[in-house]
Amino acid sequence: MQVAQLAGVSLKTASRALGGEPHIRPATRDQVLAAARELGYRRNTAASLLARGHHSDSFGLITGDLTNPFYSALAQGLEDEIRTEGLHLTVANSRESPELERSVAQSLADWQTKAVVVASAMPDHSSYAALQEHGIPVVFVDRAAQQIEADSVVFDNAGGGETAARHLLAGGHRRIAFIGDYTWLPTYQERLAGMAGAMDAAGIEGWRRWVRAGAHDVPSARAATAELLDGDDPPTAFFAGNNRAALGVIEELVGRSVDGGAPAVVGFDDFEGARALGVTVIANDPQEMGRRAGRLALDRLADRDLPVQTVTLPTTLVTRGSGERPPPRD
Image (spheres, rainbow, N blue to C red):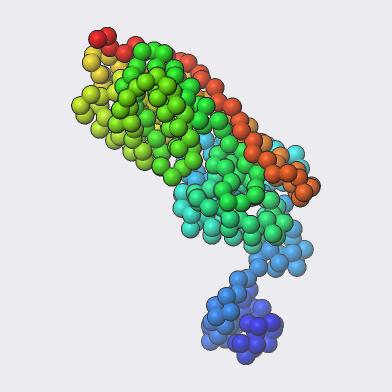
């Protein structure tokens, strides 16, 4: 073992030091750890567990935001699917940080998780090839695989964005705002592209002045909505690009009006309280997304040579009243 040789200790002593066992002199431990750092050594936790007769029976799920109920539903669907095979689920949060996501993915690999399902914050997923090379299937959810051959499960975001815009246009609205998430997210780009297709086809000029991004949570969505309402020529309708944005828009609209009427609202993703509040949404099924991702991973564990798949799940307009409020008459 190179670490033991460089540190000038026995293989047994090096293993005990790297394993964090007690009764190792501090100076010896420091010497071994310094040698490990110099050689770029990373302890394989899984190998240690397997040597003691432990075998992983889990899948790993990396989410962008554990506080978002969307991911809770996705995790439930994934867990339901893999439980049929006697497996359990480990859930981790990247907080939309590529650096934290890389660290979490590596930790899951070290623990020899059977598969990784990830809503990735990375624009380039090629680093996940290292997991695939070690026999760990990777399935991307909500955001399709980029720069890597891997299975994905996504929603019809562009279709949903187009449907939302067409619904509001059919109600007579022309000043339609889009309150979206981070601009680097494929979901933001696709939902806005769908809306753009409908707005441009309707001949609505200058509509992008009512587009706002960065609404990843309720407070930021409220702030964007307030800015538009307090500005010149405020929108008569809002298309909220995610469930958190929808809540922010709804909260800010309480007691507000435009030209004497309450603005119309359509949200993307159903959310808690939407039915009670009467909010029209572009609905999807995150539990089904989790189930499909779990099945793709299980199938790939059984047959590594299966063709790579991208599964696109449908979205559905659910009308509840908020998107049907008429615009003010000229």
